Image: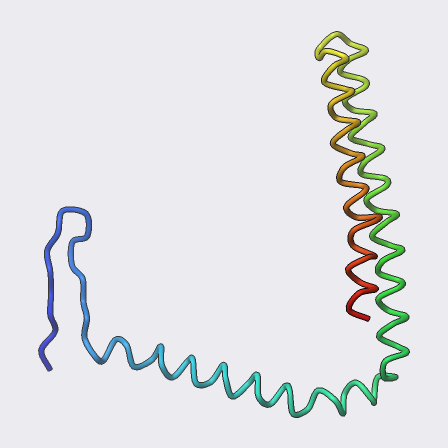
Length: 121
């Protein structure tokens, strides 16, 4: 079997053999088959795991955990920036800017995400 080769300045050799493309096509086929199998088995596993109520409860638990985690992270970031300002390593205007950034991120998580969640549920 003949392989085409090109010599360029950046790439030393570029191979475009059919033999090198074949395993990639096989991997793509295996991925499609695995996804189809997951879709076929998925509903049975959802019913076995408790159905929609169990998934809703899990999503609610995750949401509560996420809000608590982000609240702790936001408080730590603001305390860190406040300590830098208190030690004269940063300006207080940077602290105010950081407060604004935390408020914007908090509003996205606290307002926009639940709005989009309720739109699709």
